[in-house]
Image (cartoon, rainbow, N blue to C red; front, side, top):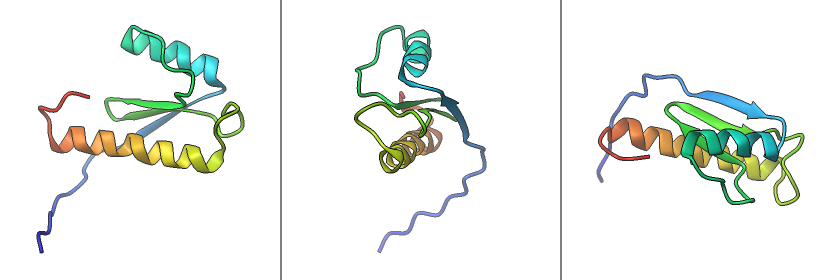
Length: 87
């Protein structure tokens, strides 16, 4: 069995947006293009940007946003562990 031992020694931030339009505006500023309508989260550096669970849009709920946050955290960990990897 292969065991990987590493220490996560950095903070992960969470920026919560009040609705999809606000999150999508920030996304467009960061990446230079509009996101797909279903996008409810992304990450930049060590910060997860996520739409509020109180207003997730028609296609998501609290449980799906938890999964999105975990998905984005994996991107952050991968980027930290593989510094040469592009986000």
